[in-house]
Amino acid sequence: MKKIYEDAGHGLPNDPGAVGNGLKECEVVLTIQELFNAYLLANYEGFEIKSTRTDNKTFLPLSDRARRANRWNADVFISFHINSAANEKATGYEDFIYKHASLGSKFLQNVVHEQVVPVICKYNVTNRGKKTANYAVLRMTNMPAILTETMFISNPKDAEKLKSIEFLKDFASAYAEGVAKFLELKAKDSTHVVVSKPEEVPKEETKAPVETPKKEELPKVTSLGDKYSFQVKTKKTIGVYRYANLAEKFKTLKEGTVFSVYGYTYAAYAVGGGGFVQMKDVEPLSVTLTTGGLSKDMEMEFRAFLKGEGIDTELNVYAKGNPSAEIRVAGLDLVKVKQFLDKKDWYYK
Image 1 (cartoon, rainbow, N blue to C red):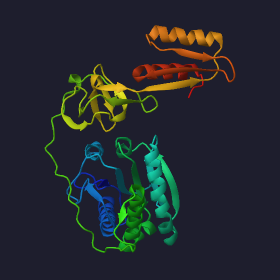
Image 2: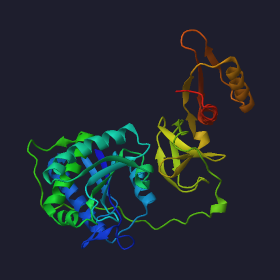
Image 3: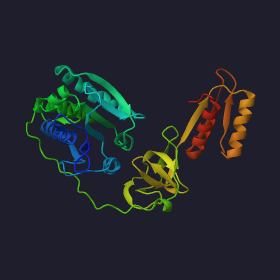
Image 4: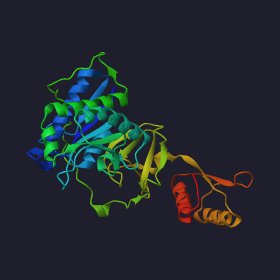
């Protein structure tokens, strides 16, 4: 069963989203989500859906939205939004993936956008294109993720379209068709149908909030950033913890699971989705870096750096043919080497 996690953006009572021309974003995106569900349920099988919310009485912080999708091990995450701008003439459709997106997210965006194009043409909508952003729900989710912006609520002409159920149905169906193609869902039959009345999808139960440890009680986390993240593999089935002091386990990872880490403390690695794993439970995976040609002075400086940092690995220099050097490193040693090469502005791949 494929797992689809959907997020109707914003949500009352805390956050109505963009407001304008008699519409509230939190209400419009809820309708899009319901029509999205209806299309999938009518036309495909072999999937499950979970939702951030299915009513306008629920609000979740952005980190919780991503965390729930991660905890459920969703195969895809889609967030529905409506745009707004100070200039009421701003118009059109656009979709977003994370600015450092995985290949999976890029493929998802291509497939969804391809399905939306005929709808854009049908309604003479401006195509603002495929874009990237640093939105939390895209940055913190572990699976391929996309965020859609269906027109501008601040534009009176766009708002009139957003009041049309047929217009919303066409966009929702395009989103659903894109996700279905991405997940390679099995069609129920050869003829797609459109369901006028959306089917209800149960939402997750909201659990009582967990008391957050005081900041001064938590170990300092050193961020690696996306550029210097590296991959590790679990040595056994391990826990993922919500806090840097390894408190509150909220999911497990099976033995042999490979994933990226983005920060570290004295005893833990920070992983995507806002969690932490114990360093001793994972094995950093080695990576071979290949540099451009190194002069004798550069080679000596490189070797001095490795010795000074206590990085016990071989630097192989090839003088013949296309001059280059190779070094195989893992984990935080890999980060140190990449940072050294970047600081020196020496080419490597």
